[in-house]
Amino acid sequence: MKSSLRFLAALAPLLLAACAPQQVVRNKGDAASLAQQAVREQQLANVDHWTLQGRLGVSNGKDGGSGVLTWIQNGDRYEFTLRAPISGKSFRLSGGPDGALLEGLEGGPLQGANAEELMRRALGWDIPLDELRAWVLGVRTQGQEAELSFGDDKLPSLLQQGGWAISYPVWDSTHQPPLPAKVFAEKPPYSVRLVISSWTLQ
Image (tube, rainbow, N blue to C red; front, side, top):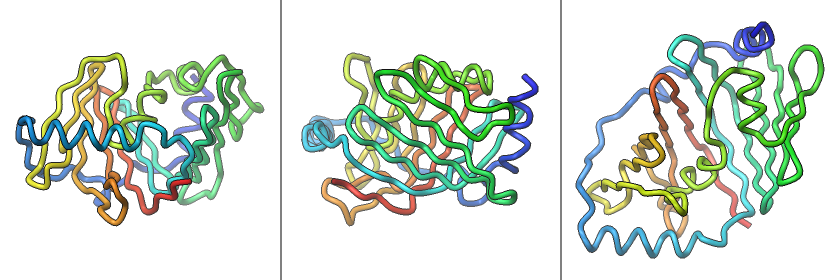
């Protein structure tokens, strides 16, 4: 628990205006919207090498933090680097099917079976990092029931899956298919707010 508090104290306050909730149009998916989303998901099905940069805010309803995030996905392997905005201290979470490593905490690195297990040990939080890999692309996780709502642009505005509500207030249409520019995921008391400044797909 002490390591969790030190980790949170180093991250600084939760993102403010950049991550403030926005009003978005939410239309229940009709046949045309759902068909368009199915095409998007097919186009992105094999996209597993990418880098995103942005700002991340997390909260458990009591404690929270934020930082500058670089997320590199190379197939089944991942690397998250989070830099606290004031102290400049960096935290690095990396791993793959063979386990995960969390570096930057006082007391030395932590190792675990997967990223979710390390987050529970370090923070006491239950964050679905495997699912976020799909949600950050604006697609549904396979094998789980999901409910979609859409904006006037026919792109998802709300995805409800696994007990989480994932909002997409802004999309980056410079990519084809379009990719999210903001991803807000909530499952009370937990929330994850990601403002993406750039995508690089390989």
